[in-house]
Length: 155
Image (cartoon, rainbow, N blue to C red; front, side, top):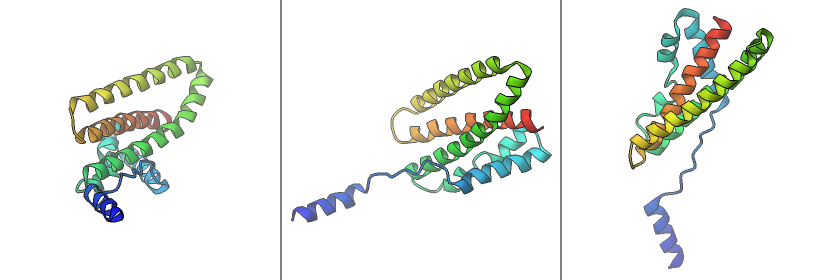
């Protein structure tokens, strides 16, 4: 009887969410390939409009938790490229004497991004939708910064 009660409770409440918020290599590659292809023929805003939502866009008909997972994976993919392009940005800044200024600007950008995304999360009030709002904010701001780095380095 005890086992039946546990089984019924598990069915009623579902399993705990096991979020897969780390992007796959394929997802990271999709974002990078999109940026490279779109940048070859367009502006920063065109790259953003073509590449933003490249992963999460396919998840819109899923549950709130699944949508949030997709958005977080996409944010992670953009963050992977931001980190990949940080190395060449650092090398360039060290070579031209602007390293301290770049580092200070990047640290401030991280603080500003995190504060803005906390506000986006809080503005949503209660409920699970706020997770999506916070994740979309992280994705959007990280994507913009990654594209900025790409254009500085390669355009």
